[in-house]
Length: 213
Image 1 (cartoon, rainbow, N blue to C red):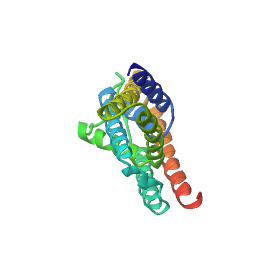
Image 2 (spheres, rainbow, N blue to C red):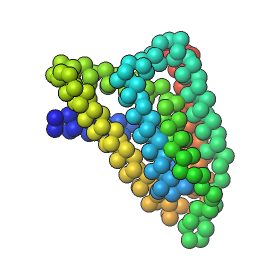
Image 3 (spheres, rainbow, N blue to C red):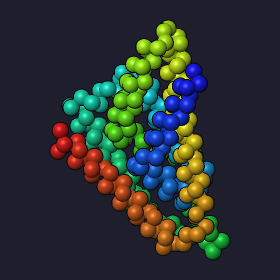
Image 4 (cartoon, rainbow, N blue to C red):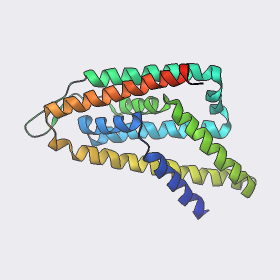
């Protein structure tokens, strides 16, 4: 069973180095809203990954691969990413002389919900988990029987998800640590750059949905 934990951690670290909308949102939130807010956003991302792994294990999330369903998923996901991007681009921040960001912080639930939907809005994340859950469960099915099969899958994906969550917290810490070196102008451009990137991700998602078959 120990090798399952190790392999799960390796898969989690591999996923953690992939750069997507969630990565930029984590960095931007940790810089502007603080380390705790970044952790809550990472927790929302964790819950969305957990949901997708569970659905993939049940076979439900394979619906996203259906051409007709993928149009709806891609459209909704693209709109959500573009919406997040526009809001982030227009959001203003102010830094005091002591380096504190002056802003009214949303509650914990807001960041968790944002992280959940920001991650789950990306069909690529769905397909990633469908692919890996399919491969791992097929392999485990050949090696384990009965309850041991479920236990093995649980151990593997627990290690995977916790590894992703741990590296997300590290990203939040690093981003928060550089906050004191930033001024108003830099913060404004961080917001704009992240906002533009999220809009680009959304537009690219629309392009893949309607023009790449």
